[in-house]
Amino acid sequence: MPWLRTLRQGKVRSLDVKSEEPVKNKEMKGFIKKARKLAKPFRVTDGSFRLKDIDPGDTLHFTSEDKPRAKEALAIGISVLAELQNMLYAQDQWAVLMIFQAMDAAGKDSAIKHVMSGVNPQGCQVYSFKAPSDEELDHDFMWRCIIRLPERGRIGIFNRSYYEETLVVRVHREFLEKQKLPPELVTKHIWEERFQDIRHIERYLTRNGVAIRKFFLHVSKEEQKKRFLERIEEPEKHWKFSVNDIKEREHWDDYMKAYEDMIQNTATRHAPWYVVPADNKWFTRVVVAAAVIEALSSLDLHYPKVSKEKLKELAAAKRALLAGK
Ligand code: ATP
Ligand code: MG
Image 1: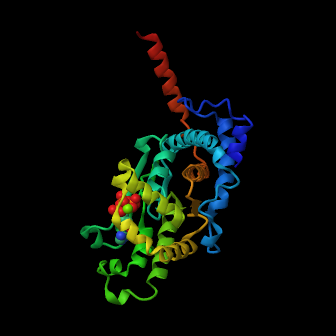
Image 2: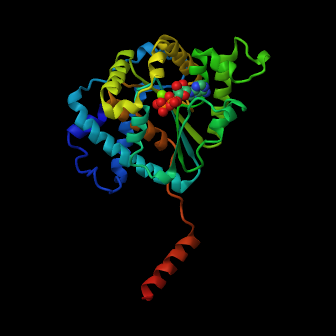
């Protein structure tokens, strides 16, 4: 992993990642380059994707011995992210939408928590989508997501999203029946139509300054079982356990098929999917952080340039302040 290698060689040791100091510009550029390289193997931008090509246990060629360094790399990544988010907020032009999808216990919540831990909460909006309410079922499926899109200058995080409309709703037809759609509109083409609608909406959003990145945290069935058992055995994890999650395991293969089809049909250059190996949380977080850095750094963010008049105003204000008491 290029970040880890750099850290091991001591090239960025001068960075005190625990301090509040912003990352220096030159170091930031180098780090962004490395982040891009790291995220690239997991980025999907077209329909040629096959789920079997991504191993949930993949950590590139790094072992668990590299874990402490991965943590350091993540800490640097988080400070780079904080700086980029500051610029995003100050520039107030782009919005960034990050969508997280996964099977239960894949680590969506903890990836979001760790990767976003350094960003200014004022510039970040997280929303978790559950089974739709009666009010939500009275609208088209996009409605509840559209009203929660991030404003310009903000990072919006969807913990689950409209993609559930092609996942859980596809695996459990009874959810589709609850959607009160006119029956003549529910044909065998419905999933292809949903993919098409999603592609169009994402194209539209991109053209309106919303940069979209989508993450599928790909956990294996074995690792999920291990995490469920931990939830049952450890009292402080009981609250995370839901019997329903166990039932969903029975539909594992249907879900995998639905995920693959969804990614093949909705991965585009402007709104790529990242299929992130999720059996090792330390690795997942580093890849997600790298992809978010990649997304923000592709936007040519900069602090707004101040006009000559404004500079004059600032100089006059400084003089007045220094002259006074
Ligand atoms: P998560 O499972 O995301 O960690 P949670 O356990 O806190 O969150 P749940 O009550 O399990 O929350 O809510 C998520 C559930 O909502 C998932 O099982 C998901 O499949 C379901 N869901 C989300 N969107 C839809 C939808 N459009 N139609 C039906 N079910 C949906
Ligand atoms: Mg759940």
